[in-house]
Length: 257
Image (cartoon, rainbow, N blue to C red; front, side, top):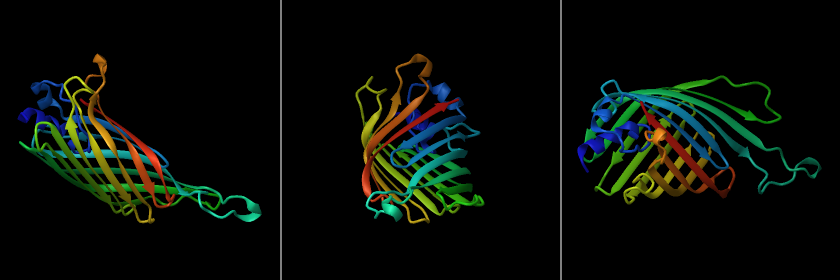
């Protein structure tokens, strides 16, 4: 793959995203900021947004920083498989609300085969259980976060991405790996389609596995939105606390400025 196309992947590689290849070479070199957002929906939901800034340009070796803010909602205890409570009524459903923010900085490396990046910085987490027993809001917790990204193109027609994020505010870790094969020109913006797998775990004992299919570098066929890139994915997820499989869907968008 030509080096300019590989460099252009840096527009979102540090955020675990893939980007369209529709910009000219001079535009790629000038981009220093990328806005991104993601919605992961299923039995648990997580919505996040943020920005990546690279003073020397996101398509170059050098310093880069990421700032993110996210909100999550998940069922901490469900009725499924539980014995009726007092009076024959099912026990109350308990929901966990989580707000998490982070600001990390690090270095990104651009090579002919792709892009790698490593970041570290502080994070903040605030969570509360929505249940009859809740009497007061807990104190926000501060911690440290590390984040690693890999964007590799083993061949001109294939794409391999991997992301790992771990933090101490909630003692949580999330990882995702995806493989894709390039689609014919003009189909879904000449994106990549293939399998993906992800795992999330935190200090509460919560575990979530997911396995599905993704379409990356999807470009909307609208001229005014030509710079907006998309990644869509869907598949099967299993959460230990729910103890039954379910479906999930993810939509991620990014905009280079």
